[in-house]
View (cartoon, rainbow, N blue to C red):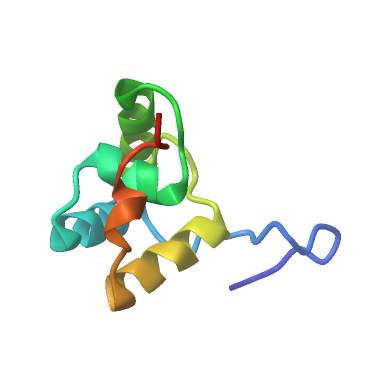
Length: 88
């Protein structure tokens, strides 16, 4: 990973592509809504799904922290309680 030293928190290149994210999501057997909930996104299901689809299609850059989280999910799984929205 190449890091811009003027902004060390902003790498020049994403660590993960949209198709890679989609492949991990499918391997885990998750919907876009479930993955979004696991990321901690709240709101209506459609908004959560649209956000994940934007990452997967390349319409929105995948933050480095999110790509690293995806790798952890792929290697270790996701706690089932993270796959649903916040308790009402």
